[in-house]
Amino acid sequence: MMACRVCLKPVGGKPKTEGFHDACLRRLLGTAVLPPLEQITRQSLLKQGRERMRSGKRFSISGVQIKFTAKVNKGELLLGEQGGDLILKPDAKPDEFPGLPANEHVSMLIAKHMGLEVPACGLLPLADGSLLYVIRRFDRNKDGTAVHQEDLMQALSIANTTDAKYEACSYERAGNAVRTACGRGQAAVEFMKRLVAMFAIGNGDYHLKNISLIRPMDKPVSLTPLYDVVNTQVYDDVHRLAMDVMEEDELEAFSIHGFETRADFLQLARALGVSEKAVSNFIDRKVLNQLPDIQQLISNSYLDRSLKPQYLEIIEQHFRCLAM
Image 1 (cartoon, helix red, strand yellow):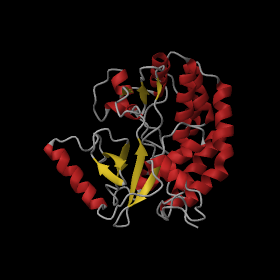
Image 2: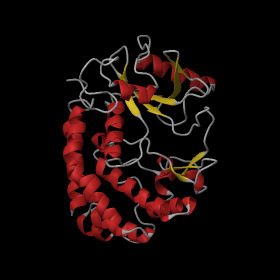
Image 3: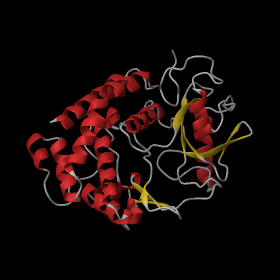
C-alpha cells in the first residue's frame, strides 16, 4: 500500500488524490485535490530559478539550494507569487545529494515524532518522476504579511560568511543567546532537545543560520519551528555536529570515547542551566523509545532504496551513543 507523501502512513480507501490522505494534503496545500503539475519538471524549476537569480528578480529564496515561494490559488500552484505561503525545493543536485527532498521530508517527520515543532511538509510528484519538497511557511500572518524572524548570525551580529556560520560560535553560546532573547529557561530546554534530535538524526549542518528566533507582534520571542533538517551523514560519512559544543571547556566524555554521548549533552545542559533530568527524559522517552516508529518512517519513506539502510544505520549508531 502506498505511503502518504505527507505523513508517510499507508493510504487506504479512495482519497481525492492518489498517494495522499485528504486531511494531510489539505493541511499542506489547503486543498485535498493536487494542483496540476504536468508542466513542471525538476529541470524546468532549476532553469527558472537560475534565470530569476541572474535577472535579480525575487523569485527564489536566498540560500545555497534553489528554493521558490509559492501558493495555491483556484486549484493552481503559482510560483513566485507575493504572499506565497509555501516553500518549494526541487531535487537540485541528484548526483551529489541523491534523494535530498525525500531525505529532508523523512528527517522532518522524525523530528516531529520526537515531539519537536515542525511545519506541515510533504512531497509532490513532478511530471518527470522526480519529487518536489514542499513546506508551509511559518513566518507569515494569516493576511500574508511577514512576521519578523532572525537567525542566530543576525541575532549575534556575526558577519554572514560560509565559515562563520560553523566557526564563529559554539552551541553553548548559541543556547545562551536563545535563552537571553526569549527571556526564559524553557527556551534553553527546547534548544537542548533540538540539538539532541539533530545528533540522533545525523544532521551535521545544524549551524547558526539554521537556528532562528521569531518575533511576533503579540507574542513573546521564541525559537521558530524546525527547518532544513537533513541526514547529511548519508552523503559525507562525517559523523560530527556542525559546531563546537562548548565555548571553552573540553567535552569530558567525548575526550574519552572520540564521539558524543549522553554525558556530553548533559554537560552542555549544566553549562546552560538546563535540568539534566529534562534532557535525559527527552533522550529516553522521545528519542530512544521511538526507535521502532522511526524505523517504520524510514521504511515507508520515499528515500532511494540504497539510502534507507545507510540512514537507518546512522540512526541506530547515534541512538547507541545516546544510550551510553
